Image (cartoon, rainbow, N blue to C red; front, side):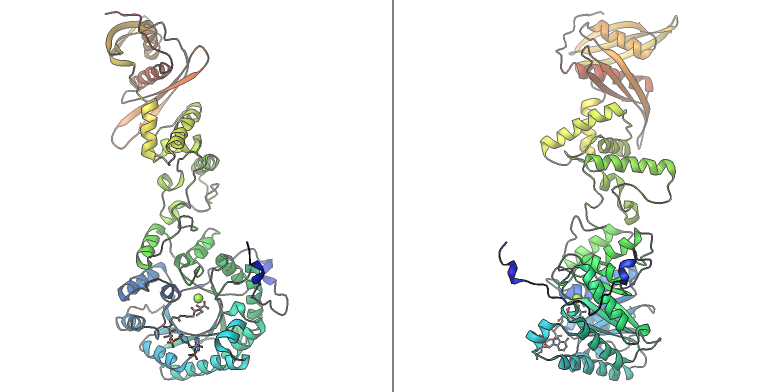
Length: 566
Ligand SMILES: CC(=O)SCCNC(=O)CCNC(=O)[C@H](O)C(C)(C)COP(=O)(O)OP(=O)(O)OC[C@H]1O[C@@H](n2cnc3c(N)ncnc32)[C@H](O)[C@@H]1OP(=O)(O)O
Ligand SMILES: CC(C)C(=O)C(=O)O
Ligand SMILES: [Mg+2]
């Protein structure tokens, strides 16, 4: 690819090594979550949400369990302002929830922002200005001191407005926007200048939010930047270090997690990572990553399909098929070896009553997010194997195939998928399986049969239709199946086979109690032919299984009836 020389990394390392976070291997508790769906997510939509949509989304975020929600940029538009007034005047903000509003550091915008929040009980007012080298040079064309002045003058105005609104619990937040493109010492300087103006105390902590407004580095660089800031911020015990990752390099989640190890206490992000350009950090993934490490994420995504549907309807965006935890295909195993391991893992789990989830290839129990084993996990195409196909036949339809038969059925079914060049649904698998293996009555159909026990053996009187002609045959055997086998051999000397094996089990269906029998016979060359019989009577099931196996053998040999009786 041409033009790579045009680019170079745009981030800054902290002035000292900051690698304490490396020693930690995991997160042990949930951070404070702040949803910025209604602001950062909303400002990135092709059509930002209208009032009703924002209200619906807001209610949904409350249901998920967010205690801090950036509800908008009140100075941006009438809708944003109206939304705030509605949730305040209609008392839609629970007492334990902080709404958050964003403002540039410009007097008229700050004024409008404080007007918009009048009457609210708990509010985070969020001030930002750009601090990066590029923005100072190109956008603001200002020296560092002037950029610090923008932040400090805004911070002072915050104090003035807040003093006039004693009924509101304020928490102030400052973001050195474009932090990742800012020299870390300068970011520290400007944050400390704002902290000094706000004078945080235990009952009124300040949030310092360190955004990767544009993600510019590998996640470990961001972690070092955060650790440096966390170690050197003024009044650190009264400062909440907040992380706001974007996903330009596709590593927002990793960056967010490492930043939490490095001293971050709070995360700003969105559901499914909606947001500017490649999006904000995906809070669903971050929360579920904690969950699958056995940590309570304090957010509820137990109905993921509903969350996805809701999000897609309100934002007009779509959740990718492979989006972690939420995508349509994230539990799907098409490939044979994965299916085999999953179905064995599930069986192991059932047998052992395992307390911990350890099923191979599935980092999460689909049931924990309201997904189904039957439809979401084992999916059948030409990459599938006997384990998966047997799993579908067993879990969806109750067939417990003998091991040897499962191998043959596996190749048969995947062959159909291969030729049709498509995935097969469980129903299509059932139809193909039954059509090929179950109760086959061509060329031999059993029309009627009766048995009697006589002198220690069984005599079967059978009416067979062979190529649509009726035969009345009688034969003796050491049991019903053996007697029927002898009837078939009398019917035609071409019918030559060895009886190899037989299995049966009850077949659980919704309405009937049925039995399923499996018979395998071998021809002179040793080729095996399987047949399945299903009937409410177990003996009849075995007879149908045998006739099916014989009929399947005769698919490859021309069947010419030679013997008739009546
Ligand atoms: C990374 C982020 O997501 S930051 C949030 C971004 N979100 C949004 O911008 C959505 C909402 N914004 C808006 O609706 C509008 O931008 C408004 C209403 C806030 C302001 O509108 P306008 O004043 O018309 O335009 P605009 O935002 O382009 O203002 C640019 C001016 O503000 C200055 N400015 C931009 N951001 C800031 C800031 N945070 N603090 C102080 N000044 C700022 C610019 O330097 C520029 O100054 P200039 O007029 O001297 O050239
Ligand atoms: C307003 C700030 C925090 C922001 O959204 C960003 O820098 O990405
Ligand atoms: Mg952002």
